[in-house]
Image (tube, rainbow, N blue to C red):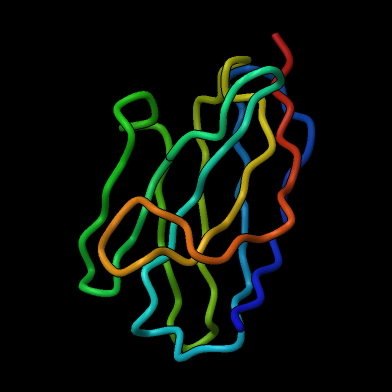
Length: 118
C-alpha cells in the first residue's frame, strides 16, 4: 500500500508562485511513476503532469511552460513548482502514484487546495 501526503497549497495572487510537495511511502520510490492532477469546482479531475520512473516528463498542454514537476528519489518526494499562476489554476491538487508509464492514478493523496485570486 502506497501512502501519499501533499503539502504546500494556499492562496496566491495571479502571477504568483507556489510549490507543492508530496511525500511517498510504502513502495520503492525510484521505480514509481508519479503525477499531479487537479479538480476545480464543478469539474472533473484532470491530469496536470507526470514524471515517470524512466525519467520521462509529461505535461498537459494547459500548464506547459508554467508548471514544473521534479522528484527526489533519495527523499521519496515529488514536487510541483507552479509559476505565473492564473485564476483558472484554482483547484484541489492531488499527488498520485501512477500505473506504469501512464496518466492513470493507482494511489492518491488527500489533496491540497490552491486558490489563485485575480
